[in-house]
Length: 107
Image (cartoon, rainbow, N blue to C red; front, side, top):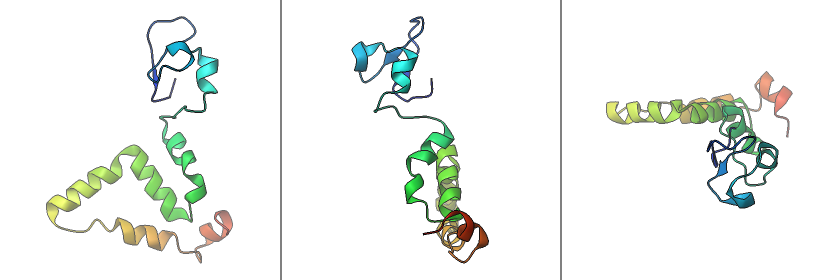
């Protein structure tokens, strides 16, 4: 199961819900359909904010956030006293005149 509220507690066909929903021990099917389910996969994290994506810059940012790359790069940039350039890169990649943004991120 890929939900941040799910933990395996040796229940056949189910598990434990840290929110205590469905008696605290939902089946996989119930958990998969729960409105409070929070996916842990990279694509799940990206999917939650898909409506906010303006262009390829936002996609790159979401992927780096989901994989932990963004935090690591920001830490290194802070320690070195230099800018990571993430904001500028995001802005450049969100340019509405780029072909990929014209194709996939039309307004």
